[in-house]
Length: 379
Image (cartoon, rainbow, N blue to C red; front, side, top):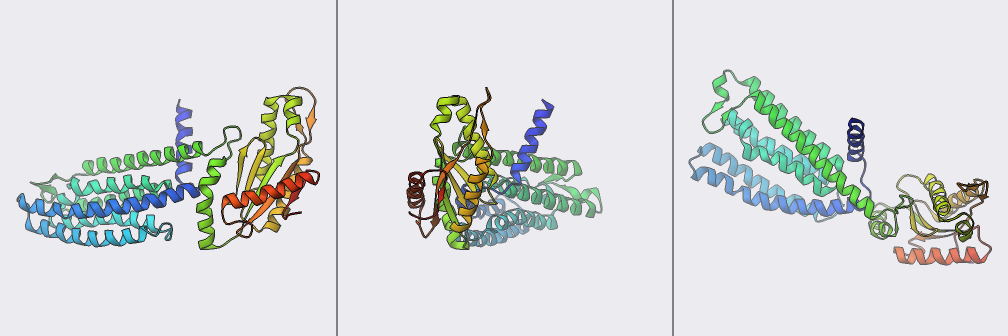
């Protein structure tokens, strides 16, 4: 049980620090906009807090501090909202807004501490915005952001507490009629709560990533499936238009695959599919993908011009022929080959349907020409 829990924690940690894929980043951009809207709404509601505090008999200085901070917060919230509407235009935006959410909370606590040291550490209404800032990172679907915001909240509040506690000249300075007594034990409890909130939010992000992966993964090979391809590609095209780069789709079909199923059975047929999938996965470079469309068909998403893509796919085709597939029972083995057709974005199509249509036309040309070959142009 202990080994399983440690393994889960390691997996959670690795996924938390891993770069999300294109779909997660796209969903995260929508989440950033949602967070910006929630921030704007909460900022408007924050205007009520100092007014309520003043009407309930609170100190005038505290009310003025809260009111001034609320005005600044509302102005900033509208700026973040305007930036978030330009989805994925600013990749630094989630980290900037996360830093802002935490630092504003710390700033308000600092201002409170100038008037009442205990208020700076014990104001649960203000301190609760740390928890809110951490929780809202789940909407961005990026575990790295959760770790960053949680760590920043712990560091800032811990530093504030150290300064306040060490700077007190007497125990009476840490006592307040409205906020009780500030103590190291109370601070430690709140730091632990921030850590727990970070871990909980990280687990939520991890779970969301797993659900998206499972919905877009092929059960036999673990590769992305057709649904993944259709969902991810629009975001990839948008990224290419913005940042530049090359993209080639390669549609591959294992030649005469039925003979493997007929001669060796479906279990060995499944193993043969995994055999080819492993070889294709091994040829990928950063930000490239291999997708199983179904049956014995695969799609390679390659970030290079069509000429370079053809050389790589052709080299892998020859490598596959040198690695015969051995059936699980008996001494039989099969030499597996594939035929392929390539299409380049945007020359051969501006969307996935057009690219797959062009690649399929060239794939059929490769089959009619005798199979076991890859075509990058029409015959």
